[in-house]
Image 1 (cartoon, helix red, strand yellow):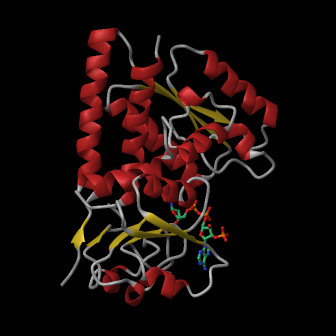
Image 2 (cartoon, protein in one colour):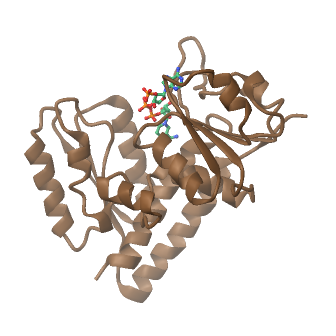
Length: 285
Ligand code: NAP
């Protein structure tokens, strides 16, 4: 039997409508308009598209959004000075630096300059440390989108065997920690993992965060597993982007599966808006 779809597009719309209502309430009850500053260093085409989408989504929710564009050859201290200024600015509630920054820059150092109470993207060293401690205010948006999608569909995480394939700072590692926080038994796989198909075959929950089209084959999936595909890959000659999981075959074995597009992707921006409103609600003064 074919798996049921985890419809991130519809859920993200609902969450964004809810965020818009919270923004209205913050404006009318406390005179606060949540404001997100997004910093883009350089002109990587995908990053330009993502940052514009974020700005538009903020505005649609009634929030203020600044897109601050810096040249690709910006120096480390220039970017950090801008962040320090935004940290001090009481009208700004959330700050995010679009990943990846140009290679000559030390990304973790830049991300970790964002004040923890404004780190709505959740990837500073402080926020990641708090995630490890189980005390995070803000969690990296794509992993948070993944667990939110599962929770809103009522899928059990506690006690389940979860396998996360990928260990990046923005996706794989925080996804594993978010699942661990919810009491899954978690295995993290990466490019040096041996016998990956066997490890994936044990999983009740598979999170694919690799960046390789259809890398996880349908016949690796345990019957009845939940499959979350965070991958987003352009493939020459195909008109539609594909995920990291072989969708057609995996959906014959899984109980639930995210489509690509329309699964994890839309949840990321919804989480960014939600966390910006949370930052304004909790820390604005
Ligand atoms: P990344 O930084 O390149 O990390 C990829 C991870 O996959 C690494 O940990 C790598 O292992 C692992 N990997 C590579 N080859 C492997 C193999 N043969 N077997 C097992 N693991 C392997 O990528 P990312 O930023 O996490 O992104 C991953 C995917 O998610 C991409 O398709 C990206 O477009 C997508 N993404 C989507 C969203 C969204 O909003 N939906 C957000 C972010 C990313 P090593 O650590 O050993 O190198």
